Length: 260
Image 1 (cartoon, rainbow, N blue to C red):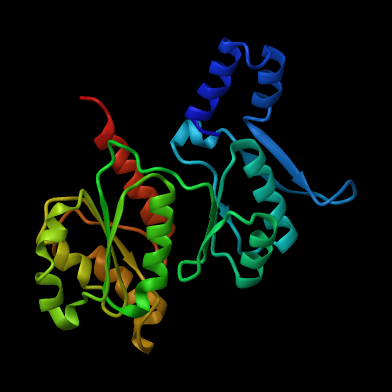
Image 2: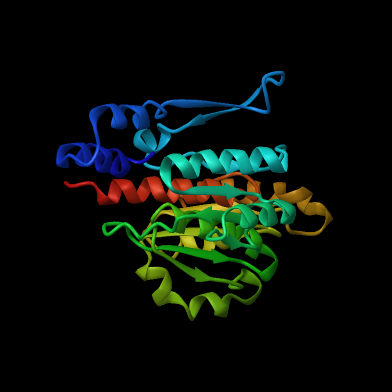
C-alpha cells in the first residue's frame, strides 16, 4: 500500500464516503498478511503491505522457488489491497496463469516481468536510461526497464552499444547526457559501464550479466571488472540483477525529487 492509497482512504472518510470502521478494516491489513496453503500447511509468505509507505516501493513478488498457486494467490492479495502488483522472474507457465486470473496484466516477456496497474511517471523523477552492451544482455536490461517503469521512473532504452563497436555508443552522446540516471548492463568483460562512467556526470548503476564465454565464469568476470572500474563513482549490483538496479535508480530519483 502506498502513501497515496492511504491518503485516498482517509479523504474518503473525510468526505463521508466511508465510515471510520470501514477505513480501519482496510488499514488493518497494512503491516503484514500471513499466507498459507491451508490449515494443515505452514505459512509460506508474510506480505509486507507497509513497504510502499516505508520505502516508496511496494513489495515485489520474486517468483523462483514458488509454486504457480502461491504466485497467483500472493498477487491476488496484493491486487485486492492495493489494486496492483509487480512480479519478477516469472516463468511462461506463471505468466499464463496470471494472465488468466488478471486479464489486464502487462507482461514483459523478455524481462520475465508481470505487472498489474501501470504507474504514471513521477512528475519530479528524471529519466532513467537503460543501456546494454549486446542483444544477449536485453533480458536483464528489460527486467531493469520494466521494474524502473513500474516504480514511476520515465525510461529510455539504448541497446546493443557495447565496446566491440564503440562508435555505436559515441553517436548517442545526446541520449547519455539527457538522462538523469543510467543503468548500464553488460556481460563479457563488462567494460561498458566504465566507458560510460568516463563520459557523463550522472549516477551510473552497473549490472553485470552472466553472458560470456567460458572464462567469464557466469558473469563473475564482468562483476569484478565493474567493481574495478577506472571511472570512479560507479554503483554495481549483482549479476543479472536488473531489478536491483531499478530499485537503486528509484531511490536516487526520490532524492532528486525532494524539495531543497
